[in-house]
Length: 143
Ligand code: CA2
Image (cartoon, rainbow, N blue to C red; front, side):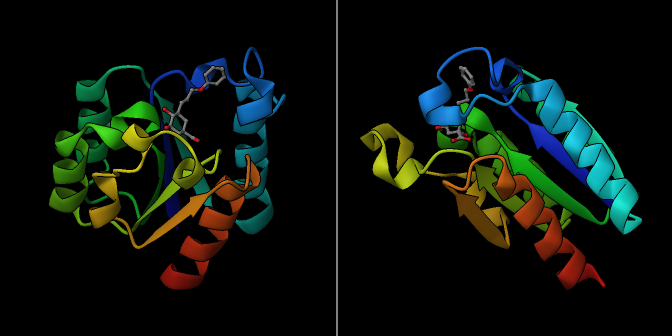
């Protein structure tokens, strides 16, 4: 089983600023934990972060035919990107949307998620644990 974890814009800044919203753990530490999760559960993991919408679309398309599940935190593109929605729909790979913060309790402009329509589950407000809950969920669904 292969799971691709995708992080969108600014998530590479984790642990550098805004610890109240996003915690104090660094992005590098998150990546390490995801790799360790894969080793522990015998899941092949691939990770990708980009600040560029088209690159994220390219990565989703490249997963077609070689990836069983996607965990995606599209960052601010969550609230703007029909292109990411279309890409997820196009590949048809089971995807889980993750947000570190509780987006539903934040600004009005964060209340829309375009990608949600292409995801089988959404996890918000569980901090970095949300990524691992998403992978647990995908393992259950895919097994
Ligand atoms: O809660 C989430 O995970 C978000 O996807 C994070 C995005 C935000 O635009 C979404 O509405 C919700 C922002 C990611 C920015 O990450 C930073 C991390 C540390 C310091 C500054 C930004």
